[in-house]
Length: 252
Length: 257
Ligand SMILES: Nc1ncnc2c1ncn2[C@@H]1O[C@H](COP(=O)(O)OP(=O)(O)OP(=O)(O)O)[C@@H](O)[C@H]1O
Ligand SMILES: [Mg+2]
Image 1: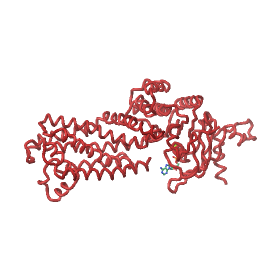
Image 2: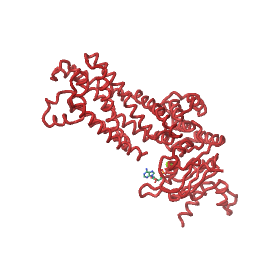
Image 3: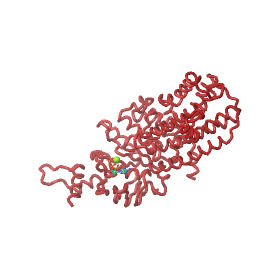
Image 4: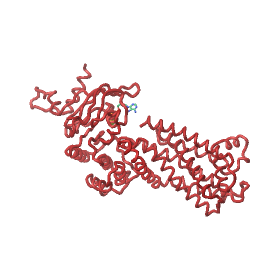
């Protein structure tokens, strides 16, 4: 089966700053893939390259079978992006934001699609208020709702729950699970290890320009068996694994 | 196949962009005041307060003044274009558009179109008020069309300059700075008083900057006077500056986004 996303030997630098040295990973269709990394690891840079916003310096990147460099418009047909910072138009109302995107996606019934999404995201009451009056959580929900319009095959979410309270976070998680349930491929970045644990079919950790580990949560846990010295056997959390790997790297 | 579809959608997408930024214009009281109310207030001030003391050699000062007021209104709107562009760039809405299957340049052209449409609306309002104040023109249909064309060209020229500022700026204030030199151009021209009355240095500047030939051309068209070669000087200024600003803005646009 063809992978939804395939990245091989990806490189990117901003002038002297070598952000991505050699990034390899792949995402299967219909999976939720979580990319973990600390601040400045280069997560957003990867997302921007995959969504055709930024040119890569080297390597092979295909999204939905299309090369991002030579077939960007095919890639854009297949994807949608929810960037790190909510990209909603604050002057417009929630409804107007959604209708605008539905029109740009050339849907035949923008109003119905909009009503449906407002309902689903609990924004019906606030639909005709300007987005500038929304709370952070509402804005994020509107942002994600805008990304779902037109049913793209692959959805990119760059730190979708940063800045949300626990309740808002759980809500977004529910949406993401539903998406994957309906066959959409989800690529998400996060700094919350718990989020990756909760959601992801596969997890990759980006550190110093490379993917240092990737696999399912079970596989990652196998790499680092529970400490035997402990009285009660304790499963390592992803956090333990993450910190261990980083320390090991730096010891070398 | 794909490209043909994309091209058909280009104008539709632009329409969506136009509606979006027209909402920005209409929902910003500040914008409406600066591009419509202020030029009207200026016109009232000049005609009823200062007009008696200004000798233009025409019978009605409002007739003399109107072309300049129209250019002031257009100049006032330029700063808002860079402001709106800057916010779009900063707030990530451009990134959303650019990750969607629409033409890369559609968002930018959307702003250009908005500038044309919103200026057209405010100019019509200003001309209407001038009419109430006694402005009369003997221009025919063709002359009015020529005037509309020149005003549109002037609008696009300033809008492309403003676009460079908005796209290249690092802060909101930086984006707005471009407004100041643009505001001053109509003031130091023959828009309000004949250049004859100015001291030598200012006069030289006023006579050799783009606004004066534009004002003179519009005046000639409005009152059925020969336009002479002023119209060519005006067109040359506008087209040259617009072309350079367009190339420059496009470069910044492609690089930044
Ligand atoms: N346009 C740019 N010009 C120069 N350096 C940049 C640019 N964009 C990002 N960087 C740098 O590249 C590195 C990676 O940035 P990136 O935004 O991809 O990190 P991130 O993993 O998304 O971080 P965060 O968790 O804070 O969002 C950072 O050191 C950042 O300062
Ligand atoms: Mg980031």
